[in-house]
Length: 407
Ligand SMILES: [Zn+2]
Image (cartoon, rainbow, N blue to C red; front, side, top):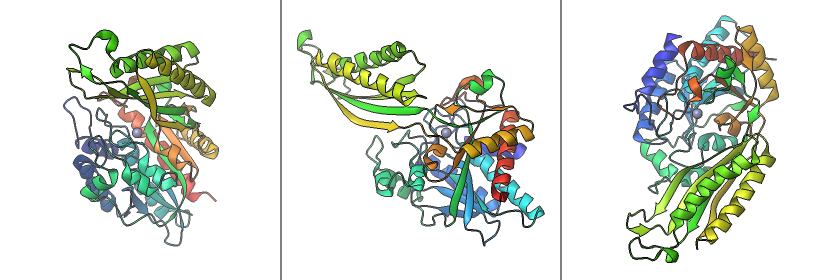
C-alpha cells in the first residue's frame, strides 16, 4: 500500500525532528501545516470538507445525499514533543484512503450503501500542549463544553481557543450528518501483539486512569544561609512523593502502571529553595478498585510525609477516567473481518487513552490496533512495519464497508 506509506512519510516531514521523530503540538504553526495538507488531501479525493468549532476536521464521502447517518473513522494529527510518525497520523491517513476505497466499492455496487462515511482528525488528542487530552473528540461527544475546551491554557497561558483562532481552525462547518458508529485504527503503543505475533487487536475497552496533579507548598528561602532544619523545601517533598508512588504500586503488586512525568518548580532558580512545586501523577489499571486503592493510599502517605518536613499539599486536579467498554458488536465484527482477510487477531483492553474512548460516550466506537515494535511509543524510534500497517488498513476498509452496508 505505497499510497499509505507515502502519505505517512509526507506528514512525518511536518515537524520532523533530527532523531527521526515528530514534534507537532496541537494548534501550533506546524499543526496548521499538517491540517492544511490534510484539507488538500480531502479535496484531492473530492470528499466534502467540514471543520467544527473546536477544529475537528472531517472529509465526508456522501454515498447518497438521502442518507442522514454517517460512519466515522479517524484519529489525530497532533503529536507529543517526542512523538513518532505513526501515533495518530496512521489512523487519519489510513482512514482517508479507506473512505476513498469504500466509496469506490460502493460505486461498483449501486444500492449497497446505507450510510455515508467520513474521515476525522480530532483536535488535541495528545494533551501535550493543552490539558485535558482528547479535547476535540470529547467536545464532539458532548462530555466537554466548547467554552471549557477553548479555555484550556498551555504553559504560556495561551488558550486553545486563541491558538485555534490564530491558525484559522475555529471552524464554522460542523458535520451535518448523524454519526452512528466510529472506528479508529492506531498503533498499539505496547508490546502485547508483538509478544504473541498477532496482527490485529480488536480493543474491548480501556484501563482506568486516575490523573492527579498535586501542589506542594513550602517556603522560598536562600539556598545558602538558610539552616537545614528551617527549610520548607517543596521540591524535596515532591521527590519523596515520586518515590512513594513507585513504592505503593509495587506494594499493591497487581500490575498497575504509574508515573510522575511532569514537574513545575517555583521559582526554579538554583539559589532559591523551591517554595512551590506541582507534579502530575498518573495511576492506571484494568480494575478501578485497584486504582482507587493505590491512589488513595498514596495521597495519604505523601500528605503525611510532606507535613513531616513542613510542606503542605493540595490537589490541583483529580481526573478519574473510568474504564469504559468499547462497542461489543464492533469487537466481534473486527475479529470476524480480521479472520476473513487472513489476519491473526486477538482482543484486549487498551492502557492508553484514545479518541475512540471519548466518542464511545456518544455513539458505539471501535478501536483496532496493529503492533508497535518493542512496544515503543511517544518516542522517535516508534515503528510499525509496512506490512503490518497494510494489514491494519485491510481490516479497516473491510470493517467500514460492512458498517456502511449493514442492514
Ligand atoms: Zn494517538
